[in-house]
Length: 340
Image 1 (cartoon, one colour):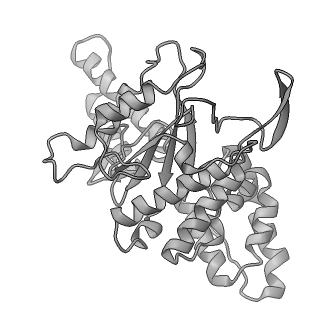
Image 2 (cartoon, one colour):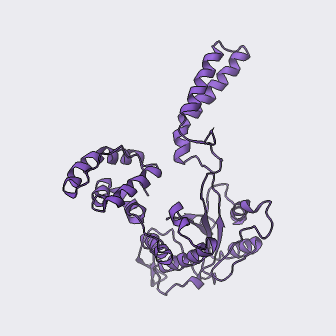
Image 3 (cartoon, helix red, strand yellow):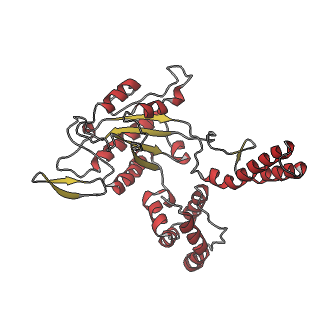
């Protein structure tokens, strides 16, 4: 379960209104009948109109400076095995989203208890994803696509008489590159904007920076988990505990669905992989043979480069020999910046 929290885009060209983001989230509804559409929902309502979402978020910005985000975007990204574990599909995913937002408010450190009724949010389920420039498939295809584009350009130049070259030889080289390009869908190289195959269901949540009464700020972007600050002569609590929030989203899903999470699927494990790969693999190797084999498969599927390993079966031989085998994997992981 990958859950992300992102502030409103505050670049020079940003739109202060949430309207553009709402329209972006409506893209999958284009050309569908009302019965087929996915609608916005919140803690109490299953169907919320887009205009209502825009009005409620845009008007809930009291005392915010122009440079401060008006809203945050939370994305819930279940894995394929997690999605397959949902018995009632969207109904279960909506119920889970509502529990996630309860965990969200509980992660704030404030003088008064914050409940889910104190926030203003709207969620939307989507079923499609497209490849972006940061995806592993795009990055690994890039050296091939660049060479192919260069060869195509050179062929055109030769045909226009702007340069000399052997067109047949260049076409042969292009054919080789097409065959060797690592990632394809239906025989076509994976490119930016191409729709990803398989189960891609996920949830987007728009949550207002201000509380539902438009009285005080609730920012998950705080640098602090829990701290106190003097404001106008009064001591106030502030902070948002992301570690607790992300961990609770996993616990909630597992409790609601009965899902059995692998070591590599835990937020804290992914975080450890990014900060201390050696410790990560040491802990991994303390799990059962079935679990660490599954974990290595999950890591490979996520793009982490793990070399082929001849891992001993017996526990006594497991620790030292396997950790030595994983040294290269650890070094590669550090260099490539893989992890949570």
